[in-house]
Length: 102
Image 1 (cartoon, one colour):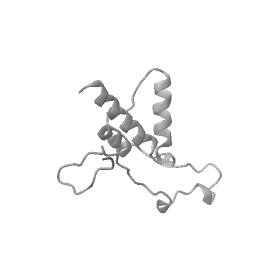
Image 2 (cartoon, rainbow, N blue to C red):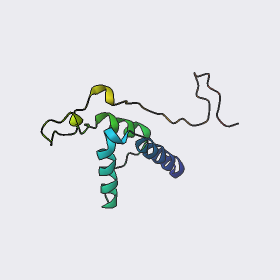
Image 3 (cartoon, one colour):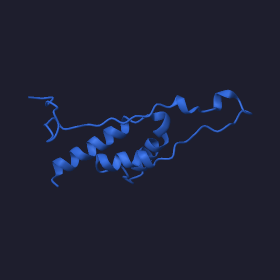
Image 4 (cartoon, rainbow, N blue to C red):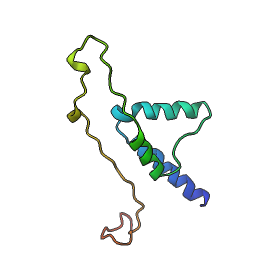
């Protein structure tokens, strides 16, 4: 793999992570940033690794620190989870999509 492709793959992976829901993945993203600032680069090399990193992340749920107040309860319907995919502007064989750039 050449340096340009490697840089593009890393950029797409990081942008994908930066677009993740901070309520769910905020601690993961902060950990990656803190590790990088200490000279330990654990950012994913490509989109597949980034996607799997999000899938395997254990969500940090708020703890009940104020005696059982209703504000600490995380309801299942409060989190909207979704994935966004970035695609190169070329047509992919087997699709009917038109290129974004001509």
